[in-house]
Image (tube, rainbow, N blue to C red):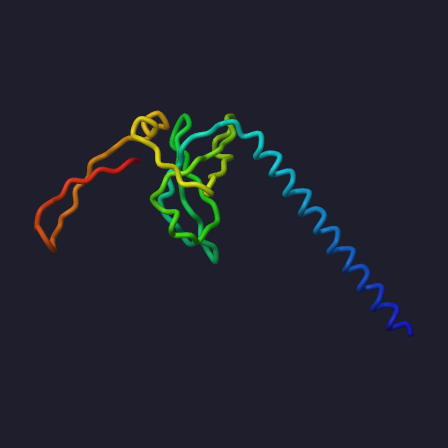
Length: 140
Protein backbone atom coordinates (compact mmCIF):
# COMPACT_ATOMS: atom_id res chain seq x y z
CA UNK A 1 0.00 0.00 0.00
CA UNK A 2 2.83 2.43 0.82
CA UNK A 3 4.60 1.62 -2.46
CA UNK A 4 1.48 2.48 -4.46
CA UNK A 5 1.13 5.84 -2.69
CA UNK A 6 4.78 6.80 -3.20
CA UNK A 7 4.58 5.90 -6.91
CA UNK A 8 1.45 8.00 -7.25
CA UNK A 9 3.05 10.96 -5.45
CA UNK A 10 6.17 10.67 -7.63
CA UNK A 11 3.97 10.60 -10.75
CA UNK A 12 2.11 13.73 -9.62
CA UNK A 13 5.39 15.53 -8.84
CA UNK A 14 6.79 14.65 -12.29
CA UNK A 15 3.56 15.76 -13.97
CA UNK A 16 3.63 19.11 -12.13
CA UNK A 17 7.32 19.57 -13.06
CA UNK A 18 6.58 18.96 -16.74
CA UNK A 19 3.61 21.34 -16.61
CA UNK A 20 5.75 24.11 -15.06
CA UNK A 21 8.43 23.56 -17.73
CA UNK A 22 5.85 23.87 -20.52
CA UNK A 23 4.40 27.07 -19.05
CA UNK A 24 7.84 28.71 -18.77
CA UNK A 25 8.73 27.64 -22.33
CA UNK A 26 5.57 29.21 -23.73
CA UNK A 27 6.15 32.37 -21.69
CA UNK A 28 9.75 32.71 -22.95
CA UNK A 29 8.67 32.17 -26.57
CA UNK A 30 6.06 34.91 -26.18
CA UNK A 31 8.68 37.28 -24.72
CA UNK A 32 11.01 36.65 -27.67
CA UNK A 33 8.17 37.18 -30.18
CA UNK A 34 7.27 40.45 -28.45
CA UNK A 35 10.96 41.47 -28.57
CA UNK A 36 11.12 40.67 -32.31
CA UNK A 37 8.16 42.99 -32.89
CA UNK A 38 10.29 45.90 -31.63
CA UNK A 39 12.77 45.45 -34.52
CA UNK A 40 12.40 48.62 -36.59
CA UNK A 41 15.33 48.14 -38.96
CA UNK A 42 14.53 46.49 -42.26
CA UNK A 43 16.90 45.66 -45.11
CA UNK A 44 17.88 42.99 -47.61
CA UNK A 45 19.92 39.97 -46.58
CA UNK A 46 21.75 37.45 -48.73
CA UNK A 47 21.88 33.74 -47.85
CA UNK A 48 25.33 32.35 -48.60
CA UNK A 49 25.52 28.74 -47.45
CA UNK A 50 24.53 26.05 -44.96
CA UNK A 51 27.12 24.91 -42.43
CA UNK A 52 26.99 21.98 -40.06
CA UNK A 53 27.95 22.74 -36.47
CA UNK A 54 27.73 19.66 -34.29
CA UNK A 55 24.44 17.94 -35.04
CA UNK A 56 22.66 21.03 -36.42
CA UNK A 57 22.69 22.78 -39.78
CA UNK A 58 22.77 26.58 -39.89
CA UNK A 59 21.80 28.83 -42.77
CA UNK A 60 24.42 31.60 -42.96
CA UNK A 61 23.41 35.04 -44.22
CA UNK A 62 24.61 38.61 -44.13
CA UNK A 63 23.24 42.10 -44.49
CA UNK A 64 24.45 45.66 -44.08
CA UNK A 65 23.37 48.20 -41.50
CA UNK A 66 26.26 50.50 -40.57
CA UNK A 67 28.62 47.58 -41.37
CA UNK A 68 28.41 44.02 -42.67
CA UNK A 69 26.53 41.82 -40.19
CA UNK A 70 26.92 38.04 -40.40
CA UNK A 71 24.20 35.92 -38.89
CA UNK A 72 22.70 32.44 -38.93
CA UNK A 73 19.47 30.56 -38.43
CA UNK A 74 18.82 26.84 -38.03
CA UNK A 75 17.76 25.33 -41.36
CA UNK A 76 18.50 22.44 -43.72
CA UNK A 77 16.79 23.88 -46.79
CA UNK A 78 19.47 24.14 -49.48
CA UNK A 79 16.92 25.74 -51.81
CA UNK A 80 17.28 29.01 -49.87
CA UNK A 81 21.00 29.47 -50.65
CA UNK A 82 22.23 32.28 -52.96
CA UNK A 83 18.97 34.22 -52.67
CA UNK A 84 17.87 37.53 -51.15
CA UNK A 85 15.36 37.85 -48.29
CA UNK A 86 14.05 40.56 -45.98
CA UNK A 87 15.91 40.95 -42.68
CA UNK A 88 14.45 42.71 -39.64
CA UNK A 89 16.87 43.94 -36.98
CA UNK A 90 17.17 45.97 -33.81
CA UNK A 91 18.36 49.49 -34.71
CA UNK A 92 20.47 49.73 -31.55
CA UNK A 93 21.95 46.23 -31.84
CA UNK A 94 21.93 44.87 -35.43
CA UNK A 95 23.33 41.53 -34.28
CA UNK A 96 19.83 40.93 -32.92
CA UNK A 97 17.97 40.13 -36.12
CA UNK A 98 15.93 37.58 -37.98
CA UNK A 99 15.51 36.73 -41.64
CA UNK A 100 12.06 36.39 -43.21
CA UNK A 101 12.42 33.24 -45.31
CA UNK A 102 8.77 33.07 -46.39
CA UNK A 103 9.24 35.03 -49.60
CA UNK A 104 12.31 35.43 -51.78
CA UNK A 105 13.06 39.00 -52.87
CA UNK A 106 13.96 39.91 -56.45
CA UNK A 107 15.69 43.28 -55.86
CA UNK A 108 16.97 45.41 -58.69
CA UNK A 109 20.54 46.75 -58.72
CA UNK A 110 19.58 50.17 -57.34
CA UNK A 111 17.83 48.59 -54.35
CA UNK A 112 20.85 46.38 -53.66
CA UNK A 113 23.24 49.34 -53.78
CA UNK A 114 21.01 51.27 -51.34
CA UNK A 115 21.05 48.21 -49.04
CA UNK A 116 24.89 48.28 -48.99
CA UNK A 117 25.75 45.58 -51.53
CA UNK A 118 28.38 46.03 -54.24
CA UNK A 119 28.82 44.24 -57.53
CA UNK A 120 32.19 42.58 -58.05
CA UNK A 121 33.70 40.93 -61.08
CA UNK A 122 35.37 37.57 -60.91
CA UNK A 123 36.82 35.15 -63.44
CA UNK A 124 36.73 31.41 -63.74
CA UNK A 125 38.61 29.16 -66.07
CA UNK A 126 36.39 27.13 -68.39
CA UNK A 127 38.72 24.18 -68.90
CA UNK A 128 36.19 21.86 -70.47
CA UNK A 129 34.73 23.92 -73.33
CA UNK A 130 36.53 27.13 -74.27
CA UNK A 131 39.80 26.89 -72.30
CA UNK A 132 39.46 30.61 -71.50
CA UNK A 133 38.77 32.76 -68.48
CA UNK A 134 35.13 33.83 -68.39
CA UNK A 135 34.14 37.05 -66.68
CA UNK A 136 31.20 36.88 -64.23
CA UNK A 137 29.64 39.30 -61.75
CA UNK A 138 28.12 38.76 -58.34
CA UNK A 139 26.66 40.86 -55.56
CA UNK A 140 28.53 41.02 -52.26
